[in-house]
Length: 175
Image 1: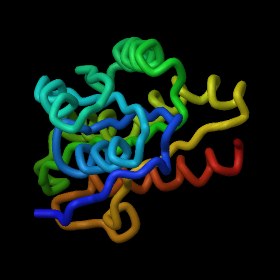
Image 2: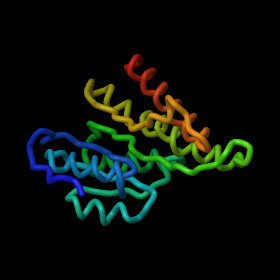
Image 3: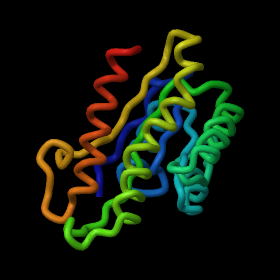
Image 4: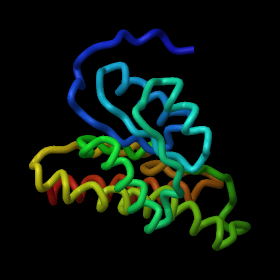
């Protein structure tokens, strides 16, 4: 159990879209943003995201597969309608399955790359034009030390997270 986080106005007037927010790290990040005064929309594949949004006092929730280009566009548009604009995108979603390379199916490899890497590109691309137009915005992406170290049975996950790290560094140089 985590220690109580006091409410503050630190993010008052700011808006955020947080992915992977039905549980785990994403839910914790969303909760902290709400407690800091931000208006937050939660995004997750799990329908439980609606209950989590109610529980923490978020202004909305969207159920979507972040690896689906059309659903990402729709989800970001919906979040934008609810929030008015998206000041902060937090990419905190991901999947993790173990599979040694010799036994890994292409479907397992591809699903991990799509959910853990391609989705970061899709979500970032969807929010970036508004941020660039306003000359204001933040994109926070959660990666993993496995993206630098690798791991037994986790080549697909490590490759995706290494890609996320490189993508994020490259994006920072672009914008």
